[in-house]
Every structure is written in structure tokens, then in C-alpha cells.
Length: 280
Image (cartoon, rainbow, N blue to C red):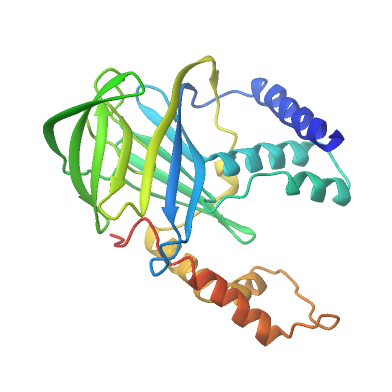
């Protein structure tokens, strides 16, 4: 229980520090989604679920998983408050696990998307044009969490999607890289429902929220370079870790380096169902 109090106190400490900083961007609204996804395309039982967040203002948004937000907040606080390694490990164990270690910033004003992700020890970011989905808006409507939502369909990155949006929330945005409709996307899923986002709640925040990520600590690369780095990590995670400067000692382990390499690769191969099947 005392570690739960420690977790809360660290988060409050971070909020206090953040409030003192000059904000470049502030978000006035928050949408909370449930994301269910199939991790292994060959195994229909590999369904997982996470909570993901979309922070909004009229021109910009920030999308990330709840686990990533908690991790970023705690690490930012720990950077400013020296803690013992034992305490750090206990706090880290309380952070919700996430399969999505990235943050997506969208700007409709600049028509740009910034993607930031940490791979092993290295932080990378790339900028691309805001993806423009070609939507077919249909007449079908339904009720969803008290909103009247309208059906729309599109194809994006190799998947066919159905979305339900509402003009009652005038944000041309949605979870992940989705957007471009005349209202906020409350629900969206691909034809196989390998990825299914469904809104759990929407609120106007009592106080604007500022980003808790220091983008100046991320190395800017091209999208092509980032995808190559990510592919190297997914195909050979042990080699990627060692290339990043992580020293792994197998001398006192019953597991050999070759076996560890094989096990890690096998584990990553089970997470083969990326949301984007095609990368432009």
C-alpha cells in the first residue's frame, strides 16, 4: 500500500513541476478509448486490451496509451527527484504494461503528424504529412454513449475500416492516426476487428493539460530510417539491445546467449499483427 501512495505522490509532484513550466501546447479535452487488438495474426486467442487517450484542442491532438502516459510522468518525476534503484524498480513494477510505447501528435493547422517512440534506450521521432483518409460517409446512424453517431468507411495502411463519428463533438480527429471526418471518431474498427477502438468517455478538462514529453531529447530521423531501426529490433531484439549499449551477462545464467536470442526472437514473432500493414 505504501508504494501506491508513493506512486500517487510522484504523479502529484510531476503535475506541480509541470504547472510551473511554460507550455507550448495545451489540451482542453480528453477522450478515453478502449482498444482491443489481436497481437498474433495467426492466433485468434491472442486478444489484448488497453486504455488509450486522445487529448484535444481545436487544432492539435496528442494520442498515447495510458501505460505510456503513466511511464512518462513517473520517469520525468524520477529524473528530477533522485531515488534509489530499489525504489525505482518497485515504482516501475506498478506502471501498467503497454504494447504501445509511442506518442502521436497531430496538427490540423500545419497538416503534420509527429511520431515519437523509444526503442530500447534510444528515442526517435519523425514527422510526416497528416494522413488523409478518403472517407465514404454513409446515411446510417446509431446512438452511442448518448451521442448520435454516423457511419463512415475508409481504407488505411492496408486495412478496411468502419468508423462512427459525431458532429456534436466538432473535432476532425480520432484515435491513432485517424481523422478527417466532420466530427470526433467515437468508434473505429477494421474489417477483421484486429483493432477496435471504442470511446469510454469524453470530458472537458478543468485545467488545460500540457505534454509531459521532452521532444528535444528525441533524435529526429526520417520515417524510412525509423522503420528500419524498428524492424531490426523486432527481428533481432537481443542484438538491438547490445547495439544500444546494454550489457548482458550470461555467465551466471542457465540460459545461453544463443538460447536467449532465440527466445526473444520467438516472443517478438508472436507480435506480428501491426496496425499498419503497409507503410508509405
